[in-house]
Image (cartoon, rainbow, N blue to C red):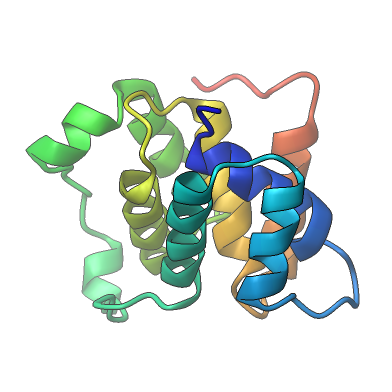
Length: 158
């Protein structure tokens, strides 16, 4: 079975992470559930490693007030992996106040950690939702993003 990390993450998010009041199961419980759902061992391990990166924003420091006014320039590697629409949508979410500067960087990090060649806006929305869910105190931003993920009529960007 050719499972993508994002498919596994969405499965976990739908079934285990987004259950109100329920504790997040440990790694072995998740591994067993993924095995029972038919996901391959290699893809499961990559997804669990991706989740580890979600909770620990290693190497990411807080951004100064001056940097918040700066323009984000995407590196060559980021441009190669994230097309213009995805990069524009990330910046749009930041402009709308759904993502902070630090969260934007975390989202970019998690997008690049996916094993997908092409990353589209729908995948981006799920990653943003997972990043916001993993951070305490982001309920309002999470709710706004959840509306965008499950909205049947996505808003137009102009």
